[in-house]
Length: 404
Image 1 (tube, helix red, strand yellow):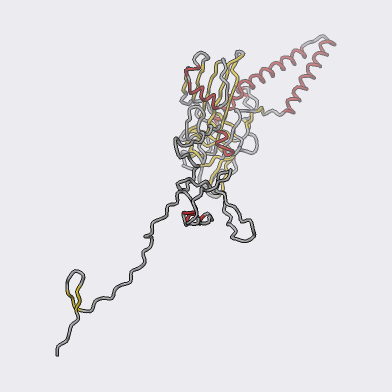
Image 2 (cartoon, helix red, strand yellow; image 1 turned 180 degrees about the vertical axis):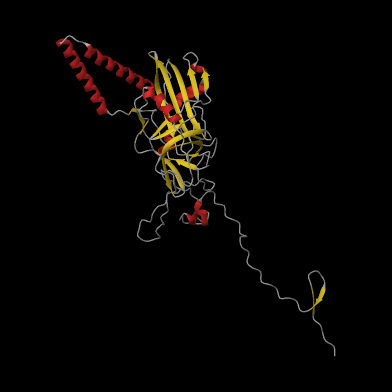
């Protein structure tokens, strides 16, 4: 008995055994339909229009341009009656959509010619750019340690001595008391003039010669007045000098002097200091010096740039004239002198203040009270006091002198 085998022929012409496979159902094609041309009309863009709550356009209706309000964003009219869908509220006004249908973050540009450019903002003053995170210290100032009460007491004693000396001279005819009181007054006056004229140099000399504090990382003098000398690094806000644009500084100062009436007068000045770090060279301990945010700071930093501006050669320095314009300073016919000082990152400075500690952070803060030098009788100086942190720069900076 013979068995009949079922065979079938493939599309290639080969005959194989077995029944033919049933035809497979083809999945419907997705995305084969061509995208419609919108012509810049958002209502014809499908899903893009739904994102912005724009109703789709009627296929049979003619295309109309998108209406725009006076302020620029797309205008959407709310339904006049209570029926109908209420449009959703968005987080802000929608930007004007260009004819290409592409939404960008910048302002719309004209379709032809050169693009519309926004005006370049004016250069801000460095103090405005830094904000309140830096300190604008005043000129290096000091005060005599003798209180005002003792000054008036001294004046009263001299007046009483002069009156007594004059009375003895008139009554007895002996002027020795009056001459002695007058000589003592003259000596005190000369000493006062000496202190007033040389006081700043003496204060700076005293604090430069003040010994450094020995730092022991295991036994820090917390709450004590210390002096640390070492290399500095910038904090969160590095400074930049005003004229030469020296970057990565912790302190900058620019002073413009004008020569008139046979003397030099200060015409413009700006000084800034920010928080910075200083490292002790012996132990490697790093301190945060909180000199910014309006802290009281007394700085002794010599200028590193001195520029002499002659009235006949002023036009030969375009950088200087540009700097004057940026700071709204008029350039008169007088001779001017520009001094610029700075403490750059990596320089060696001395800092004096109160040592604090918060968890693992060691800080140097300004003293709450004034700091006095004490009486320096060998140098004929009264006690002199300064206020706040004391910042001392290099005594001999690499001075650059420009003769223009």
